[in-house]
Image 1 (spheres, rainbow, N blue to C red):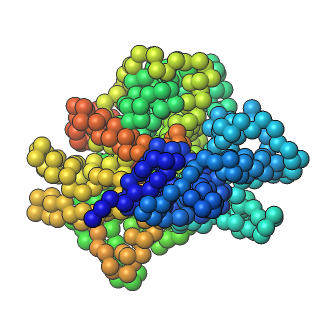
Image 2: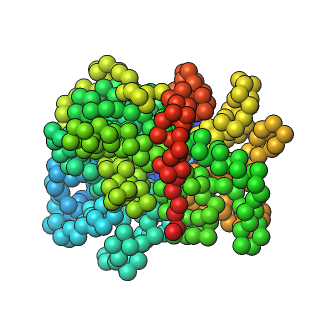
Image 3: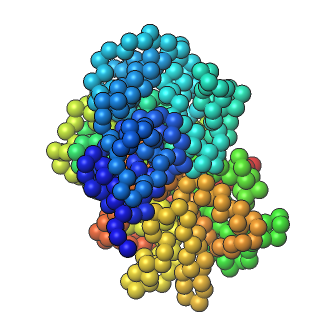
Length: 571
C-alpha cells in the first residue's frame, strides 16, 4: 500500500492516523495559531485561527477537517494573514488591555499572537465590559471581561472532568461562560481542580494567589515559617528557568526556599511514606475482614484519598461512596499535622508561632487546607498553600538565579524519604507505593510490581497483582471523567476491584493546574523524571524509612497515629 501524503506549503508530508489537517501541519514543523484546540478534548472549531487555504482557494478549518491523500494546502497566504489579524483585532476590541498588571502577562496566548502578527493598533473602539470578578472560590478567580469564548474551560469541565460547574449561557453577542444562573463559582459543584484555569489561554480564569500572606509571615520576626514541597514540583519548576522538563531540581528548590527566608524546608515525599503505611494497612484490614457492599449489593473497592478534588467530587456527585474512601489524610495534611505537633513545645518556650506553608502542583490543596476537618482548635495544620507557579513568581521577584544556585538537602529530622514517596506525583504512583509496602521484601517482587501495568499515563488502567497467595485486582484512574466512568461500571457490577487510585488531574499531580503549562509530551518527560528520582533513591519502600520507623516506635505517632493522620468526611 502506497504512503499517504499531503502537500503543505510545498512540502510533502506523510501521514498515517492523524485525525485532522492541523496534526499533519504540526508534523511538518509548521505552527499554525490556535486558541481552542487541544488533542485531549473534542474539536470545537470556535476561534477559526487555524484556517488554511486549499488549492482551489477555499478556506477550511484545519482542526476539524480530516486529511486526504495528495491534498494540497497553504497555511500562510495574504488572505489567511488578514483573516487572522482581523480575528485578533475583534477579540482585542472587547478585551481588557491592561496587560502589564494582568496575571497572564507574558504567558497569555492572545498577547503572544498579537505580538506574532505585529498588531500594534486596533481600529475598533474598546467595548470590553467593566470586570465583575468572581473570587468566591478558594482556588480560582474568574474575570469574564478577559474571556474570548474559546470554550476550552467549558470542554475541560464537562468533557474531561465531568463536573459541569460552568457552561455557555445566552446566545449571539450576549454569550458568556458562566456557572448556572450566574451563581458564584463557590456555590456550584466545582471541585477546585483548576483544570479550567490550566487550559484558559487568557486570564479569564486564573489561580488564586496566597503570596501576600506568605511574604508577611516570612518578614515577621516572631514566626517560624516551615515549608514542604510536593514530589511533582521537582520535575516541573525548572521549565520556567530554561531547564528541561523532567529534570529533578529538588536540591535547587531547597536552596531557593532558604534564600526566600523559609526557616526549615522539607519534602512532602516523607509524609507520602506515612500515607503509604496507613493506607496500605487500611487495605490489608479490608481484605482480611470482609468487604463492604454497595446498596445495590455490588462489592466496592477501597478508594485512595490523597486528592482533594477527587474527595470533593465524591462528596458532590457520589456521597454514598464516602464510606469506601480511605480515611487517610493527604500527605500534605499529614505533614501539616506532624510539623505543628513537632514545633509546638519549642514555640511555647520561645513565644514563637509556627506557620506551615506547602508548595503544591495542585490548586485544590488551597481548598483542602481551609476545610474544618484539617483545623485543630480552629487553627489549620497548613496555613498557606502556594502552587509551583506561585513559587516561581517568588523566586523571580527576589531575583534568585535558579539555574545557577547550588543544590542543598532538606532539614532534619524529616530529611529521609523513600522512592515510593516520590512517585506519588505521577498517576499510578500511589498504587505502586502501596503495593510495594504490602509485597514481599525482595527486588524480584518490586520489579514485578513495576511492570504490573500500574505505570503509564493512560486515563484508566486495570491490573492484577500477585501478593503471596492473594491476587489483587486494582485500578488506576486519572481525570475525573475517567473516574466517573469507572464508578458507574463498579455500580453496575461490570467491574470488580479491590483498590482504586484516583487523581483528579489528567496524568496525576505532574499535570496539576498549579504547574507550568505543558502538553502531553512535557508531562511524559515529567513522569520519567519522577521514576528516575525513584531509581536513585536508597530506600525503595515506605516501611523501610528509618525516620518513620522511629516516629512510630518512639515518637509522636506511637499512640496518636490515628488522631494525627486520619480524617472522616461527611460527618
